[in-house]
Length: 330
Ligand code: SD4
Image (tube, rainbow, N blue to C red; front, side):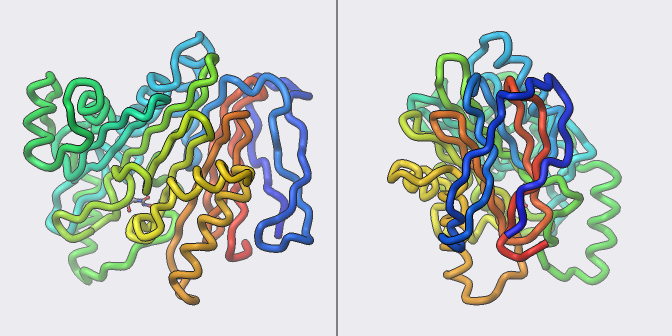
């Protein structure tokens, strides 16, 4: 298994804050590998799926000033929701096969409070609607028109989310209308973000436009607490990207947090989570799943099926984009 590869390291350059711990590989217990672990100054830290420096940068601004992890993850992922060049999240997201952009998001705080929206249309920031569901209703999840009505009542503006680029691609797709999820689309995908603040509290957020050209009404893992995201302030947190149906089948993020509770490192837990999905699929591996996880100490882990999944971290040690180890060799 190849060493994880730091592909970029910009930022504060606090050399010496990162050391490597040697752990056994899950896939092959006799094989040792290096896992980067912050040994000091591990708080605060933010980690996000994919190379989203604007998102992690925004979250870091909040954490660095002593802000809380819930604000950090919400404000962080909002950067991607508003970015029309990211075609997997928020405005500019790829539509379903009928041409409608439908968004899913969830958020969870250190007290186990959570909120979620599914099949939300014409609202740029589903993560903030999810937070309102969490904080201002007795419910956890709102769907479709009800979620939109709630958002409008809370002051969110309605707007068209289908950009000309995404509309044109959808028109081209309709010529063959073949539904096959594309692995690592544009290297930008569902954004899952986890953070620990200065008080040691964990929060997480996950937001997506879902699989491109999905059936109308389809909802994946991303807004499902336990599947696309899970936070347990005593243990750690995890979030997922990739083909949501597979993550739902294993309740992936909850599984990873529970594995950490049983003593696994974030890296070992992510590897075990991916292994469960692979076992369920008996050799069919033509799809991508990527998990990231963080434990209470601020150690991070990531693992995926296909090569090409990266994640961003921002901590006192700097701002880094890291290539995840994968089950299928690069
Ligand atoms: C979903 N997990 O809707 C999301 C989409 C995603 O790569 O991550 N795409 O299934």
